[in-house]
Length: 93
Image (cartoon, rainbow, N blue to C red; front, side):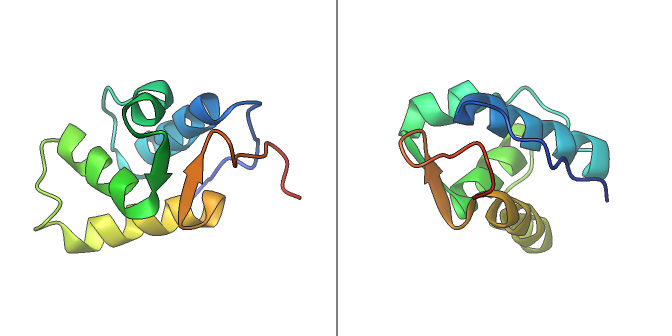
């Protein structure tokens, strides 16, 4: 898998990069945007992110346990268990 190591200056753009990686690596290509995800919640957990991606793909997150776990793990590798615009740091400090 080719996951981007680049970090964007704001969380919305960085989430868009992760969404793009999900499309390139696993074929989850949908209309989700980082701005949309943050605007609706402010704070986003790994599990919420995974559920949003699956719903955007027309899948039921309750039944797609393996995909939900994989997407959640990709989020956690980048942000930890949750992230918000206030806690996001563009560099890997």
